[in-house]
Length: 420
Image 1 (cartoon, rainbow, N blue to C red):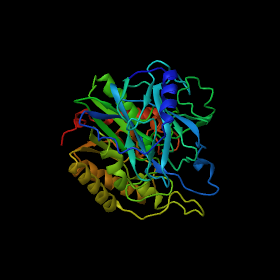
Image 2 (cartoon, rainbow, N blue to C red):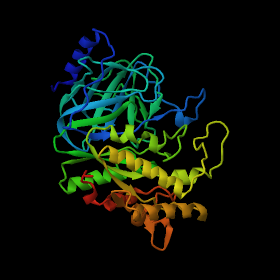
Image 3 (cartoon, helix red, strand yellow):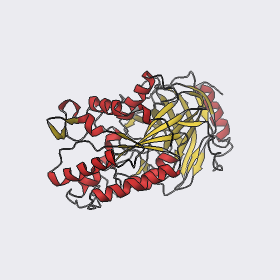
Image 4 (cartoon, one colour):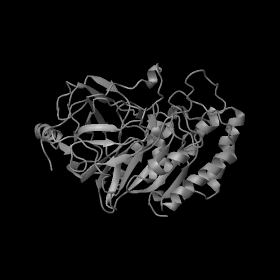
């Protein structure tokens, strides 16, 4: 039911007095549930003195407010939380969702309390995930929502989505889930944590899952502006009046197809089923992965935290074999899979030859159900190993905002049917 934030606080306090216990797993979503927003988690390197990029905020006994943008609207939602990489139970004492009022502020209109098995909080064992109870809320596509979680007194952040391209917030100690004012939320961070999915009840709709590395993650796109290529694809679908399709972004910066990383997440072929296929409503996947496999084999090994390790040698045949395994997983689940060509990255000749061979196979093998030719959309016609200047963010690998928009335009809409 819809309640005000003040009612949310009172209700949460009353239920909390009954104790927070670990509920049974929520009922699995039915065919009418469709994932409208999602992210993929990666473990945080657990070091005594981590470098600044890998220092997680203190969340123990504090409230965490995360801003998400659903790509499909509805009136009933479910929130998914994950303790995939946790070493101890993930304890959330209370949770709420409300329309964002900008920054860390939340709107009192349309706020809703989130429960798990009828309780205000939950304890998720390591390696598991949970769906909330259905929540009545008027969820609108393209509008920001604040999901606020009051964390257990000993809770630590051991996993996150590191490159969120979105500012999120941590409060001073205490339960500030119901606060509409931003005053308590003094700390900012640019990651997502624990909340991995927002599903809506939308019979007849489906989800397009974009999965890959930093180019799908939107690295170097504008902060807080939703300029990643999956965001641009969602806007394109909205212009086309395709209200039957949601788009979710499961890219992880630094991710590889074949190798795990201490910083950049599990290898995509190993995380594919969990991160893409388990989300309700996914009928189509767009896969863009491989450039880091090609590059990291040649990066210099570092003492201490070496995020590029292992520096696994790969060739085109290795990558093609990995693609085939991912395609088989998608087809076994009845999911339509679109292969995306690897974009120009100003590679030296020996690595460029691998990229060219992989792209030729993606275009001609017919192993994928469809092809999104991102390489053709972004490359410089006069020098195809490089990005066009207007599509280059400046590092010669990651697209600019304009480049990400061009990628979205290169996705054939006929490929997003969800049929296989």
